[in-house]
Image (cartoon, rainbow, N blue to C red; front, side, top):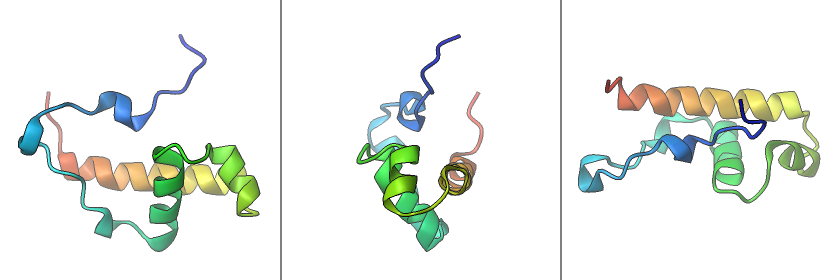
Length: 78
């Protein structure tokens, strides 16, 4: 097992226009903020926690909830 954590983008497929961007309006303001900073690579979760004076657990929880909401939009394609 790799020590490196997988990123959400590692699971994205290149389906062209058949795979539209997720609807970010389902996220709360805090989830959206964390999603933009961490997922886009501006900062890691711990770094962003320090920058915003939040605990790393809070950032991780917000990121997990954002990912769960966005994953729910895609449904299950097996």
